[in-house]
Each structure stands twice: as C-alpha cells, then as structure tokens.
Length: 428
Image (cartoon, rainbow, N blue to C red):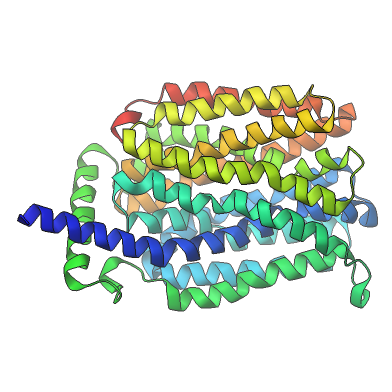
C-alpha cells in the first residue's frame, strides 16, 4: 500500500477499536444518566399523590434541576480539560449517583426542589464533557454517526427504563419503602458503580491508550491534530470567541428549542399515557415504544448525515416532523393515534441530535471547544427548565395536555426553520 493508504488503514483501525472500547461504556453511562434525570416523571405517578404535589409544583421541581446544571456546566467542562476526562467523568457519575439515591428521602416541596437542584449541580458537565471527549478520539467526518450512537442511549434509557420504573413502582411497601422510593434507589446505584469503572475503562486521549498500537495512535493523532489546526483558522479556539460569537450563540438557541421538546415530553409522557386509565406497568411498556423507534432512527439518520456530509436538512426535517406530530397528538383522541403521534414526535427530535452536535464540534477546538460546547449545552438545557415547567403550567390551567403539546410543536417548528438558516452548516 502507498503511505497514505497505510495511514488511512491505521486510522480506520484505531477508530474501530476506539468505537468498540469507548462507545458501549459511554452509552451505558449516558443511559443511566438520562434515566436518573427523568425517572422523576415515573415517580410522579405515585409521589405526587403521596406528597401532595400539584402539576405546577412537580413541573417546577422537575425543571429546577437545570438551574444547577446550567450554572456549573462551563466550569465543569474546563475542569475536565484540566484534570482529564477519566478522573472528572468518574467524579461526576459517583456524585450524581449518590444524590439520585437520596431522592428517596424527599418528604416536602422544599426538599424536592433542593434535591433536584443538587442533582443538576452533580450532573453538570457530563453530557458536554462526553461530547468534548469524543472530539479527542474521532475525526469530524465520523462524528454525526458516533454522536448518534452515543445519544441513542437516551431513547434506549426509556425503552428499558420505562418498564423497569413501572415494575419498581409495584414494589410499594417492600421493606417499608414506597414504590417511588425504590425507583430512586435502584436506578441511582448503577451510576456510582459505573463511575468507579470509568477509572479503569476510559483513557484521556489516544496517546494514553495501550490497547492501540503505536502506529495506530500516531495515525489517529495526526488526523485529529490537522483538524484542530484547520479549525483554528475557520472556527474558534479561544475562550472569548467561543462564548461570544453569533454562530455559537445561534447553535445555543437552536439547541434550546430542541431541548424544550425533549424534556417537555420526557418528563410528562408517562402522565399523558396514564390519562387513558392504564396502570404503571402498562404505562412503562407503552412509553418504551416511541423511544425504541427513536433509537433506530438516530443511528440511521446520523450515518446518512455523515455519508452525505449535509447537516442543515438533517436537523430541520426531523424537527419539522416532530412539530407536526406534536400538533397532531394534541387532537388525536384515542390511545392508538396518540401513541402513533407521540412516536413520530419522539423519533423526529431525537434523529436531529447527531447531525446537530456535529456542528459545534467542527466549529470549536482547544479551550474554545471546552467552553463553547458547554455554553451550547447550557443554553439548550435552559429549555430543559422551560419545557417541563410551561407544560405543567398549561396542564394545570387548561386541565388537559392539548395546549402543552401545541406549545412543544411550536418550539420544534421554530427550531426546524432556524436550522435551515444556519450559515455554513454543510461545510462543518
């Protein structure tokens, strides 16, 4: 083979090994992360009645998580770059796991608000930290696929977490604990165990990976270094530029609109489905259906985006599909058409995530990447506060979820239109 062919083969081999080594573990970690973040939606099926929480109280408590998350996200990502991904990701996972278990101790509105806030602080930086970590290992041309594989763990968390959460609620009274208390304890412990495992599984960069050959490490590092130099020319590498440039801020606004839909339905879908008179276990299995289709769509759509090197339409089309489906679900009536509408909506906004995150990772590098990715995610997670809270207020004010679903539809429609106007999206 020619020298360039040899380098390409070595780089491809390194990417395959990194994918097999890192992605399954990171997917499992993010599955647990997302489950611990949104399992309060299932706990609410019993917890709200036990503790006397109104829809607006629950909506605010679910949302306040994001205030702590947003406040500490950029410092957390800068700390990851300083101390290394292995140590910092392990620290995040162990601390959030302990607090997730402690949610079982909540007995009042104040306690609920405080624990959700602390959970957000503990989790701060995990998702943007992983996105930053993936840029240390995978070239830009691979990222929509890799990020889609990683983020497919979110809908998979609901596929397995829905039935699990429903089953744990059925443990009401065992050892003197309520079902929702069992839910928090059992689903929080894996984060602690995975945090300890991260110390042995994760390597900070290819240079530290003993499971790569010397030639594979050099081939992969050469490619990543060349991309970083190119990004310094066409993108943003310093801290100030990454936090102030309009293109970065525009990505943050777009992600805000996407996350409004993600958590607006993520926290409330169990209660939407329960409104058809189903028990918790039935709700759990039905909730899994939209997320199963979403996981499949994420991987297929992310691969297609990488193959065509196109981003804007790969973000806009699924968001517009989700907007139409949410609007339909507001008037769908019986359970079957409601489930079809919710499935299309969930599939839509999840499919957009892989192509979306290929944009900031190609636009930012160095310290700019650590801060800028965290900024985009922080702005997006403000949607995690706004979405569930507004849904709760609209539900309490109108007595149904129709107005709330229309609100989610409007947010995603605006996001779809905005994606089409993102300058230079095809190039990055």
